[in-house]
Image (cartoon, rainbow, N blue to C red; front, side, top):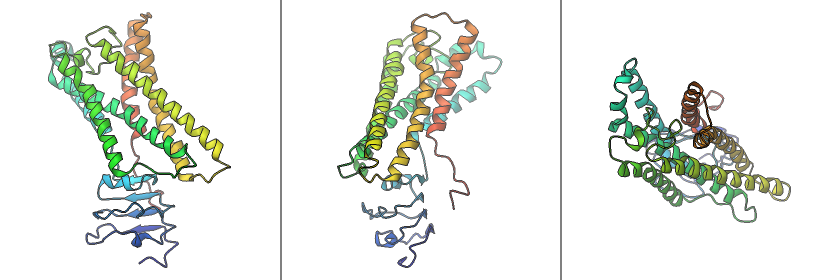
Amino acid sequence: MFFNNKNLQKLNLGGNNFLVVSKNLLLHLISLRSLNLEGIDIDNYNATMFSLLINLEFIYFKRFKYCMYVPNVPKCYPSTDGSDLLMGFYLLIIGCQDLRYKGIFITHAREWMSSWLCTTAGVLAMTSSEVTVLLLFLISAERYLLIAAPLRRKKTLKPRVAFLSVSAVWMIGLIISSLPVLNWRDSSRFYGTNTFCFPLHIDEPYRIGWHYSTFIFIGLNSLGMLAIGFLYYGVLLSINKTRRETTLNVRDTEFVMRFFFIVLTNACCWVPVIILKVLAFLRIELSEEPMTLKVRLSRAISMISRQQAIYEPPRTQEEEL
């Protein structure tokens, strides 16, 4: 259909409910940069369907799950991130309770911290934070295997393997956040040790469940950040070594660099939290006012900034060509 349109850069097929997307349909569009397939179901997916669109930068699907067909395309819509959504719900709950108890919180503090709504908010926040760390590790490992093995055939994760891997990450995240709820059920629940319902245990490091909190926020998260750091160090060494010896996909390199800064931002959000927990365990004296300020800032930064790092920015006029 598009045999004589090799220089076509933007194609909008959205809304064609009866269109069957096939490999032959897109075969000759080697210059295509933006492709709109919104409103179209893709039931006959072929592994090479989009492989020839080497210059594709923006693609728009009916469903987010179709984005797994084009892992090397920088901008895929509709974009979504379940862990960010959970963190958004957590922030919404905390914000609503802040407005509800403004000026009278001191008389309702115990009631709020021992409520199931506080526990629910804490579960959402911990699930979001741990799933984020695990997903960053999963993507980093996949990039390492793809980039750091130039003599092997480059393959991204197959859709089924990717689905199972992400499902496993979410299952682990839910287990991590749910175990404290099952273990500590009394009025001083694990998530109710502070008004934020987020069990960092910085202001009082030895409250209920402090072993578990330390294992997660210092042990697991630090291990995850270190593992991601080593993976990217290996990737950068491989890129530097093979730059002149082999043909490296430029888009793979660009993806690595973009994702590297996402990981760096996420690490910068967690480092203050880890440092403050270590200082709390060492019983290093901090005046009460700065301590309160640092705790609140570290929580806000580790939650909100991490969202901004993973969030897919909206389209601009330049992106739409």
